Length: 149
Image 1 (tube, rainbow, N blue to C red):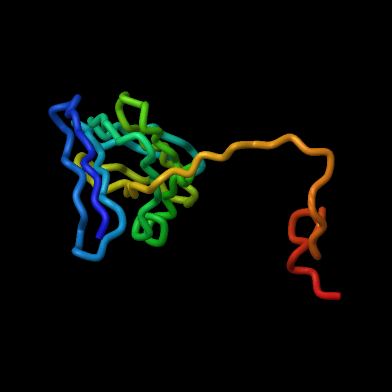
Image 2: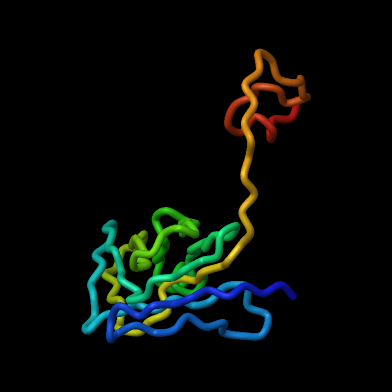
């Protein structure tokens, strides 16, 4: 199994160290660094602090992803999913939660609100050309590959 070392700086007394819930977990749980509950009314967005900053090694990124339990039970998701944390970002990790449901949701202090997966990054070298190779799909638009002829 591949491993990297990610440095963590606590910037809030309410912060929790991210942890893998099980041996087979791909993502580490990120928790809400709150002093008291934070309300998210239906159809609204809130930025939830985690109280931590990370030093991700060059060549890697952190991918912030939603938690399936919050999505299924409470219709709470991450608005920009997956969110990307670049290796040169050193600020606090904030989670942009959206209430897709019809009921008010209260984020509790220390609640697991997201997960972070660390992944290698491949840099692209772009080459300007006049034409591209032809494919079966070619320039078909959204949903084009699902059309049966």
